[in-house]
Image (cartoon, rainbow, N blue to C red):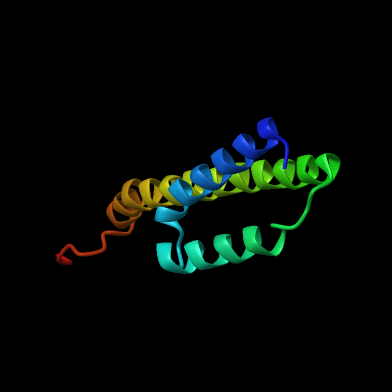
Length: 96
């Protein structure tokens, strides 16, 4: 593997490992899947193929970030709009 690509691959692995800490199925599950994906492609030596795999990994990073952002947004929305909904429907209040 060429030197600049090697450092990019290592950085990609570190970034994915960091993002995997918050994965919904657990960090251990994510770490195992990540390791198997990288080990599956460890014998690739063609720089163009490596570049394609790195680009795919960067796409996965963007998808994970979107997943985490959406999860946080849904949790926040649930907290605020659940209160408004219960106030409108008088849920949890005694009926006169």
